[in-house]
Amino acid sequence: MDINKIQNLKNQAISSILEAKSDRELEELRIAFLGRKGEITQLLKKIPSLNSSERKEMGQIANDVKRAVEQALADAKKAEAVKKIDIDKEWLDVTAPGKKPPLGHIHLVTETIKEITEIFTKIGFTRVAYPEVEWDWYSFGRLNMPANHPARDEWETLYIDKLKHKKYGRSVLTPHTSSGQVREMEKRKLPIRMLNIAKCYRRQSNVSHAPMFYQFETLVVDKGINVTHLKGTLDYFAQQYFGKDQKTRIRPFHFQFTEPSFEVDVTCTVCGGKGCQVCKGGWLELGGAGMVHPLVLKHGGIDPEKYSGFASGFGVERVLMMRHKIPDIRLLFGGDLRFLNQF
Ligand code: PHE
Image (cartoon, rainbow, N blue to C red; front, top):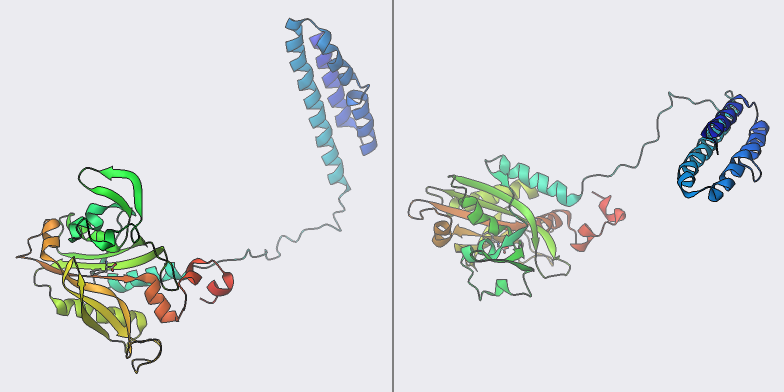
């Protein structure tokens, strides 16, 4: 078999295709070269009978020729189709306005996180972020929650199997944003005005609790910080987020990492404080707060004789559900556009 002959065949095929003037001529050429009895097809048929050293080389060349001719035919067919377009009928108005793709909007939870961040950064807080997979050292141990504390129970906290550390213990999905407290103190930058907003995880699921939710945590450490600073910050937040007539109240409570500890309530957003079916005597519960426990300050390398601080931790979904009167937290994570498009 002669390589030159094959190349000639290819050139001949392609130049005839380029000269063809109609679909019919192109079809005739296809049959002449690539049809069952076509010249290229005949050539390919001879290849199996060549000796093995020739077979490989010729096979490759003949297949390349076949592919090139097929491509030339396809291109020529396309060019013929373009020629047939009736410009007068198929004109394109390039000045016509485009079709708008459907545009989404920022999710209510993301929007609330943005708003909370603005409220607190206005009075000098700095937003921070800490690991979503956290050591129990920071989540519990350094916060005075010893190994047998119920918050550490497997039915409450989600553990990561296998990931363990000699000093830091087991690893967990962050159960609360308070795990950022000691991490923040370890930065060794005083005074502290921290705003930690993060995903938290707990084994829970009902109308007001989801296994994944967001918390926002404040931590202030400075000289001379006392409960009035905490109360003032809580009132400021309530008025900025819920409205200017809102008040907060603090009730004694217990957390291992604050002393004294409080639960924080805000004027009921449904009845405005008069008392109704939704609230407890005009108040709705916001979350926890307190004065940072001296031992926690020590764990963070801060001298509790010189410095004091407050902390608070609330649920992002909780405050937004209170403001927008959303009855079920699962609506926020369901992705139902009929719900989401209301906001
Ligand atoms: N971490 C606590 C919780 O998740 C809330 C809290 C934060 C309490 C800061 C006191 C101080 O319930």
